[in-house]
Image (cartoon, rainbow, N blue to C red):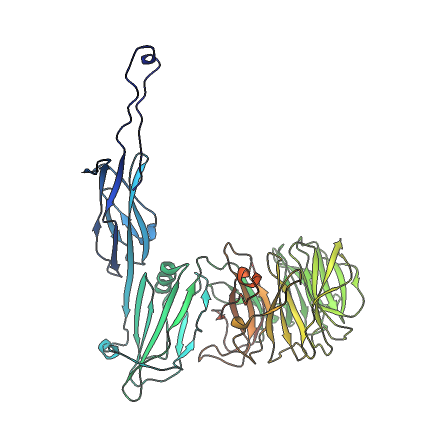
Length: 538
């Protein structure tokens, strides 16, 4: 309830005459009833709740406020009529203030709408899963505990590993929703509308996933519940990655369906090792390592540097203003005009740098640096993480080492975060290409704090975690890192590189702790192909 005091004054004419001093109107408050209420809704709707408003005088007396103006703070939770009658949504839950106003004075109640739904397409006897279950482990196959999903992530494929002769019950619950799924299948995927209801209701919160099954002994067993965070914001942009089956590039708009982007079917040649500029250009290599450089303008599909141009390149990076392109060959850096592809000069000729990434603020270049190497892709010598200061106009100073892991470990695939504050990179003991022990690490751009291994994201040893790239800078407290990994995607695929993504909390990392979350599989990709280099662009 909010207090208001109104003062009565006088006009200019009245001021000339004797009059009584201004008298303050008695203060009053607005009270809404019920003050707090919780109701349940579902596909068929829920209980309708009439709210009432009362004027509360300074002496405590109350009178109904029939002319109050009513409003809701959360329109997704339901609808509110002009007389204060609340009808809950039939599509999702939520919490809302129910506000009654008279002039500048208002009061409010709180309504909590809990969305409940039961899905039983298999026609199972639901009572079989009642009672106290026997605790077990090993039922869950996917997702992992603690994963954070963007709000607009397509429906998660919940998967379990232990076969049941009867069936399963999956419960997705929170303070605002409860979905019960009964099925005989070894997994469940919600349809788009149902999954959107769950994520919209719980955006900014979490959902607890509980799995029960009937085992071979007829017992009801239950695995340890999972906690799944639902980010309050959508992920944006598209992931453009290299696919073995397409011998080229494939695009997945986040939440969408994969489609060819630039493949051998279009160019007549294998296309890989790509990078995309903010200005809408893509640079790539034709026909494998040390192959010809290609550059294409995505706005009209024209080739800036066509096949057979005579220029060879491996890794590449565009300047943030889209003026320059840097390419590597045999450890050297060549500077190109990004609009024409013309060679402007040699930016570094020491044969010791590869895998460059230009910082978003245009101040430096991060590289994997060796003491000299002949292959940019298969690194046979020790490498460290270094930055080269950008002196302007594509000229660079001498490298400064930020992280030098002890041998036999080496650094590869560094990438600046979209705000330029962090560098994610890979550490492995192999030649950096397809290394089973490859893991992702993070370092702040200054290099003054110790590098952090992203244990939550890495998910264990021997998973070939590689090729990390960042999502565009979100309007949120977490960022997103995409990478390739040979980890198992539940029961669907294992041992083949697939694209994964994980949330990263920079505040936690700045405090010296692992700021990553467990990873989730990027929906829409082909599980039968090797998928690499997930460039996440706006």
